[in-house]
Length: 221
Picture 1 (cartoon, rainbow, N blue to C red):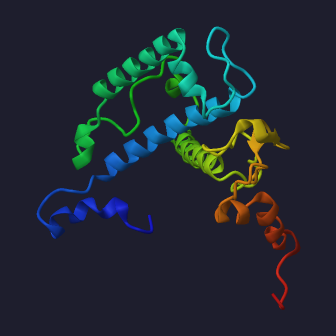
Picture 2: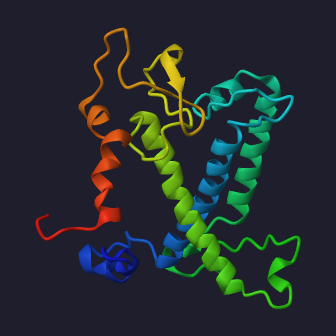
Picture 3: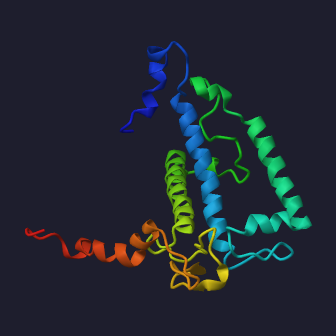
């Protein structure tokens, strides 16, 4: 915590006498919740490129999947179910008291354990909680990289596919990717000029610059 966010709560009344900054309980609850959402999102982004549920919109591009669901009556019912479920869970387990550190449960503990994993003999609950936290953080970085590679194709090494198409790009000019899915080329035959960032920070430029990791640095470097 190099910026000291976890200690801001203790300095609430040092600034203006108003409790503006949240307790660390609120921050941990938010981190776990965002991590869980991103773990589901990253799996969905990757899996739907190869498999779609029969009877639902067959759209492998995660960027266009939501629009396809809005256009399908069956998928609209699914969106309503997801929204209602989220509202019920958020209303039942709203961490209001966590803002000032008096929440009556541990951050992230919703009491949902139908298979009783936490009560099995030999289960190290603290280790499982730490694993969930680490995987959630990694998933948040993974989802952010998906979005970054969508806006600037080629900006994330080893992620040149996954339907990383710029919003204003024409899908008809896309070419097969060496990783997965499809990606649009940086330049188009229509004369569109790529942005300076997209032209500079591509995988072909970044990876050669990292060769020193394998060979090591010399005194002349």
